[in-house]
Image (cartoon, rainbow, N blue to C red; front, side):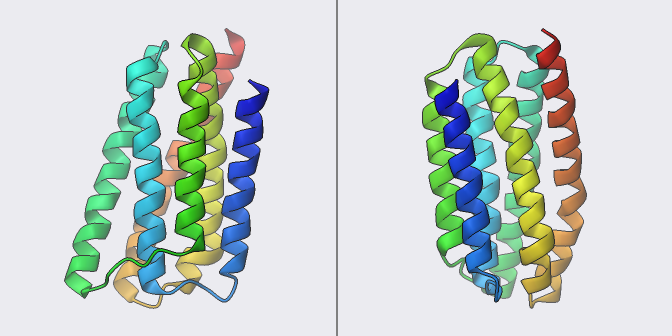
Length: 175
């Protein structure tokens, strides 16, 4: 379990460092890559949770993450196609992918209640980090009005996911 907490701490550090590196602000193509990567990372974790979940509540949450983040990626994909924008890999999208890969590797070593707890703990930290990046970097940096509007539109879903994950975290702590 300590290894998972260390991986989570390292992941959050990578996200925050990469976001700080974009202090001048990522470009719209870089924001597109960040959005797609952030959503895909959560979809990948949700898919793993579906195969290993012990708690039906956590499994339902994982399915919600897959559905909601998949819808955001579809909306983002439709928008970048409409705008003729090609998502551009950047330090933030790369660190998100690395953190997601590290999280999956740590989760794959766990089973049962330990797996569910680690997954939910990561979801709490991940959604908070993504919200922080959306608020501090992505929305203020978006130059295209439609891209900015999409970020503003999906933000409440990330807040709801964070609150749902915190609720699950509290429920799992009682068991």
